[in-house]
Image (cartoon, rainbow, N blue to C red; front, top):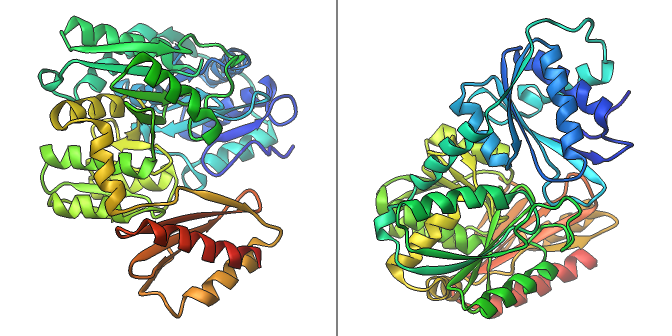
Length: 454
């Protein structure tokens, strides 16, 4: 049986056909057999099917003779943290994050919370799950509820990223999108309150509800942003944050309700870390780079580019011992958070940055003026390869430099663009940036668009 739910770095599939409890069970046994039976962390998001899928995975791990440390309802980042905290062989979070309602999946890591991909065992797991020839159930498997212990340790680690005494009174709107973030955030807020942090929060769509009555939690979609924007203004909040379904991504809004594009959040967080750790290394993805590179250089740090995608960023973080890594897609990675991404740590870091330096709007405005960008623009094309070849033929002779780290990046002096083809669909993704000239961004988008559609 071929399992199409296996993707490059995780499990994602349509319920019933591509993923069900039987498939989840086989994946669980293959996971334990590949990584070595021992101890595994297991969490799940709030989708209506996640509890049943997690129960099947739990049984599979125990049938391989393993101990299962159950986090219950939790975010992917809590699984990342707990895998290292408990010295587990690996971890699984049953989640489809921001995928449609009829999907579910799993995010998985190895010991030390290291990413799992084709080279490190994912395809071996797929082969074992497809063959479904596991034999007799093994003895010794057991289940342990560690939800309370794990969350307490996780909250302590999240709070360790900021100096609570530096925080000034701020009112922050938080939108959990009816995803898994609500209970975890409440635990963080309770500890902030206990320690006297002067932060006040207005909660929105806070209760986990796997039916997602307010829409699939994906704040990156432009059509999903106005609701949070309006709520920030209505509450008179100093800033807003919205999470996706498993809250490993977070998205920011300033006090006017304006959405903060991911590349500017990366720059702000890089600056925040370099203020505390001068000379540190920062990892960034290759789509929009000039703003981050400028901030890092001016702060005396070192910037290193890595291909887009969590496995690449996490590996670069480890290779370079980078203090922070960021992608414009709103994934933020931290050395002191087991080199993994978190959607809660950035909230506290941005609150600290605003407390020290002024409004989020003012902090971002200067960077937008210095390095305006287009944001990611997607083109659905019949023949993406031919379209990209036309772009290459036009710009290669004119480019100061061509970067093939991920797709194609063309440096044209006052403006630059990155063009990437999707691995899974006939879509080409374009990002354009300029040096202090917003008109060049629009001009660049128009030029590339004409070639792609030609």
